[in-house]
Image 1: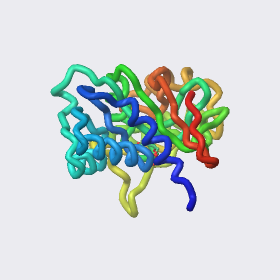
Image 2: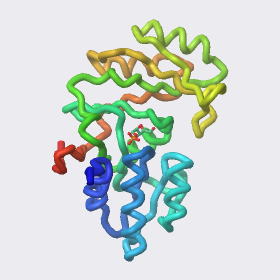
Image 3: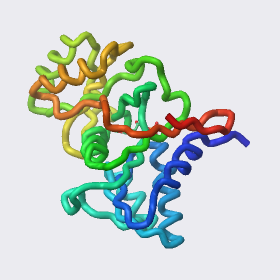
Image 4: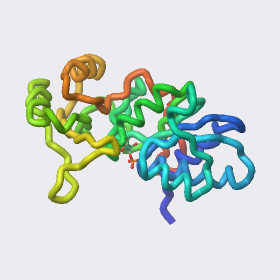
Amino acid sequence: MSINVKQLAAEKAVEYVQDGMKVGLGTGSTAYWAIRKLGERVSEGLKITAVATSQASEDQARELGIPLVAFGDIDSLDLTIDGADELDSKLQLIKGGGGALLREKIVASNSTRMIVVADESKSVATLGKFPLPVEIVPFAREWTVAELATLGCEPVLRKNGDELYKTDNGNYIADCHFVAIDSASDLALKLQGIPGVVEHGLFIGIADLAIIGKNDGSIEII
Ligand code: 5RP
């Protein structure tokens, strides 16, 4: 039987959750396993409250009986567990493959600690092979996409079938193909300077720990 490395990493991260914590629930196929394990621990008596970063994670948590609160109803969170599309040795991340980067960044930035959970394929020397998701406002989409292209990438508006993909916030995603990002912090500043950009998927200085599930069944902690 092959090992589910996403589950391995996610379940390890859930060991960091303690009674009374306010927990941010990430989005995606790795965060799914963390939410599942949390649900199990809640059914065994763990007392937490949680904030979800997407409708999908909210639905899963609700089904599992994890007590949920709205982000606006709390001051801060203790711990967020979330996946990543890429991470480097400095714990810089690309996120947003699942389209939830805006809420994910808000929740993680308001958490005392963010633990990234991933399989080893996500660990890279240089970010950028995975197209960087950038959430943009529909009003200015053509102009914003043209501005993004001036940064040296090929932006492609994400689709859902024949329609443009809409985030939980009603915005679009431009997936920006860079190939390699030399300086994630420089690029983040440039992206923040484009008015139609709502948020981008570079997470710099946000993650505190990464738990990486390896194909040989071991776990690497960065
Ligand atoms: C969603 C995300 C996800 O965390 C990221 O796409 C990784 O997903 P998965 O664990 O399914 O590979 O950023 O917006």
